[in-house]
Amino acid sequence: MQLGRFYRSTIGKKIVMALTGLILVGFVIAHMTGNLLVFSGAEAINGYAAKLRTIPAALWGLRAVLLVAVILHVVAATQLTRQMRRARPVGYHSRDPQVSTWGARTIRIGGYLLLAFIIYHVLHFTTGDVHPSFVHGDVYGNLMRAFSSPLIATIYLVAMLALALHLYHGVASVVQTLGVTHAALSPRRKALAMLLALAVSIGFALVPLAIITGWLGGR
Image 1: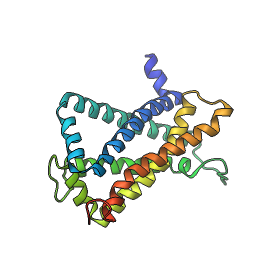
Image 2: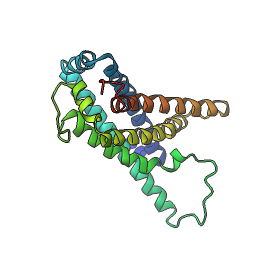
Image 3: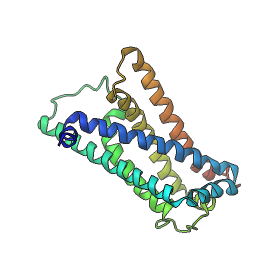
Image 4: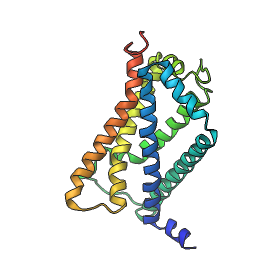
């Protein structure tokens, strides 16, 4: 089948990664925006979460799309890595990474760390399995109780640093993979990727920082 042949090619896998990456970037932007409602108080963020639950078909449909996107993204990345290793089974005698960024050199390990964090985050704030005082529907209280722990706040802040690096390299690569490669656009592409990575990661990081410092919640 043509679709199967396309996916088995290197460019096919890169396009799958690019498209699923765009889906995931759209989600993290929306998720970050929703999280910032915590600064408007318990009624605002709890009401937002309750409203989402009133349309279960859309909510579970979104979760299904995100799950498929994550699986395809991880599988394509893993297969691309294996292809590159098979193509060069003996590593470079010496490497001079003058052109690549730190985000590019850590993109794979950072991706797997983020996958582990996503699983933890779902168990922490969605199902409550690893949250010691989880109350269903009380998003504001769950955030306050979780991020009052310096350890939990630190875990999330470190994860946001990994997210920033992943977004910076990932967004810049997506634009190039999808064909936007004009030399005049390259600096803007990287600047846009940097701006997006900083905005999203800082937006997420503001919540644990505000809670652990007492800015939010009057601690």
